[in-house]
Image (cartoon, rainbow, N blue to C red; front, side, top):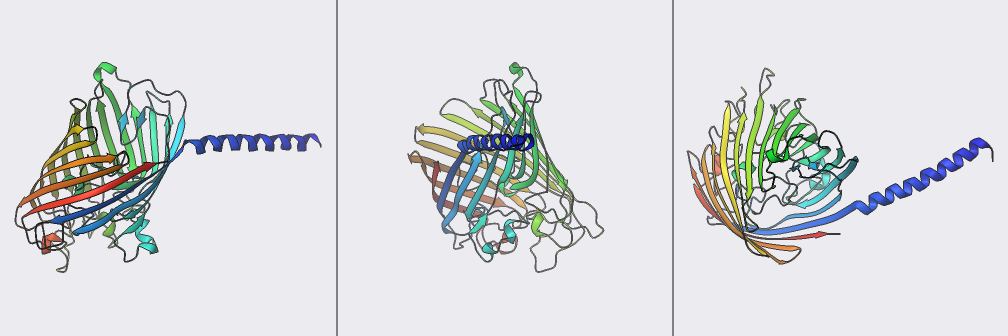
Amino acid sequence: MNKKNNNLYFLGIFISLFGHAAWGSVLEDIKFSTRIQVGAISNDSGSENVFPSGFLSLDEGINVNRAELIVEKDFKTNIKPRIGPFPGAKPEQADWGFEFDLRYGKDAAITFGLDDELDINDGNERLYLLPQWFLTGYLPIADGFSWMVGSWFTPVGYEIGAPVDPPTSFYTHSYAFAYQPVKHVGLLSSIKLPVDNSLGIVSVDLGIVQGWNNLQDNNHDKTIIFNLRWRSEDFRTWLDFENIMGYEQSEDGVTDQTRPFNAVSLDAEKLMRRTHTMTLTHRFNQSHHMALNLLYGFQEGGDLVADANNPPGFLITEDSHWYGVNLNYYTQLDHDKQLGLRAEWFRDEQGAHALLPEGIYKAVTVNLSWWPQQHLRVRPELRYDQYSGPGKPYGGRLPTVFFGEEQEQWVASLDATWFYSL
């Protein structure tokens, strides 16, 4: 064997051994987990419609909310996008990870340009989705730097799809959740700032995404995410200020990508949409914790008026504002039982949401989360909603700006979620 072939031979052995070792290490770090959630929901009116309380579960009855497989590789870091910074020294080595989710069920907020184009979903209420697929990484820059790129649930708002999923301790959702983005495709980076520990732990997020729920942005304008996060030195108090801003006007007649807020400019003017939320969470002790969330949203109005076949808020023709507050309180009754309370107030000034009328919304929700065994949660819940304004947002059928029948609603639900990790 000549020298050249000899070198190639040993290079091949090295690559083969390194490849097996590297991939063996990666495979050891990969985790598989699943969540299966089934729920039953009903209201006190003659209508089967339970929106907006049920959010994606629009009708009374039994729903397969999700059957989900998650494949992920975690990475060593002291800061995570969407979650924030952690105490302690930063890792000195770079690392990487990934996550891939496959979901089937009614909890089906689609990514336009991806899930809506799958033939398997045509005409079905329960859909197959790829809600999250992203790479993550860490670099020992400043006090710690991490990033994620791909498709991921939004970091904007108290109720988000990750890192705790299903999103909250409640089966029904807040009005804030109905008015905020669900997920994004793009890049989100997070850096931990070099702040003295006595002043708390601080990080900043910066992201560039394809708007709200889009793989393909129909107006070719990127949207910016900017977040500021603070944690107390003892890590019991968190403050998150989260923002998303960008031009979200509908172009070329494509309104699916911008729902539930549609605005069109006939002279190609760019129309701003922005949402700002602030969330304060505090753990009083091992048994009691709370979260206070404030929300403000704005959509610049367009100049195209919807035809008579569409509901009044289908196209936004004047600058529109929505804002609200919700308080969440949790009490650990026992090692396997938690009581949850939520009170909320929300106002949509101009009826910006394509499915709901303008007015003031109030709601109170109470539930009990019970873990009869480690991997199973059973959760009865009762909710009361009240509305004041010119419309009737409950009962009837969607969109309730056109077809609602009631100004108040009681909703009862019972759901069970099975969690398991391999």
